[in-house]
Amino acid sequence: MAGYDRKAAFDPAEDVEILRSRGLGRDATLIDFGAGTGTFALAAAPYCKRVIAVDVSPAMVSELRARAAGAGARNVVVVQAGMLGYAHAGDPVEALYTRNALHHLPDLWQAIALRRMAGLLVKGGTLRLRDLVFSFAAADAEAGIRRWIDATAVEDAAVGWTRAELEAHVRDEHSTFTWLLEPMLAQAGFEIVESAYAPIGAYAAYTCVT
Ligand SMILES: C[S@@+](CC[C@H](N)C(=O)[O-])C[C@H]1O[C@@H](n2cnc3c(N)ncnc32)[C@H](O)[C@@H]1O
Image 1 (tube, helix red, strand yellow):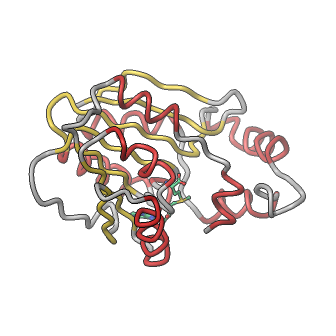
Image 2 (cartoon, rainbow, N blue to C red; image 1 turned 90 degrees about the vertical axis):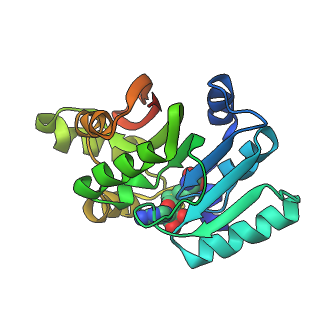
């Protein structure tokens, strides 16, 4: 877990700011799906009423609970659940976040998870979504994946992802194409108000509203 965080070296500040600029405030509830060790959830917690950090993994949930307690973040509620099985109690929420978690589901289930997420939001609520999604054409997939791996892979597995790990991701996980994910977001009832693709053709970030 610490290894993942070190490799990911993720700064959540930009995403916190984007959600704040779209109305995340002291009265708002935010759900983070696939919250992992809570890097984003803990960064967002000071700015809203409540963060519900959802993760399917008991190990992640236990680490997240320990971190939230260590940080004194009493408005972070940690729930062990999958994004398809999470049962929300209470009012719809103002904001949703998910980073590098949707790709754990195949496309059919991604579409269903996104639809469930849209159903959790108030009208005009915001989803901020980041994931490893490929923005090249299907015809360019082989070259695009090779280019991404060549540019991204490191030798030392302690500091980043190795070629073998990146190849395993493509083989075993469900990162899809931007041009498949975007219609899934539309089907779920989201309007994409901002999208950004990394120049390498992998990694995308979306801000979406209902
Ligand atoms: C690559 S980590 C990303 C963690 C965190 N969002 C981040 O950006 O650092 C993916 C996380 O998604 C969780 N996960 C995988 N499948 C899930 C599912 N179906 N529902 C909820 N969480 C899931 C994993 O347990 C893991 O913590």
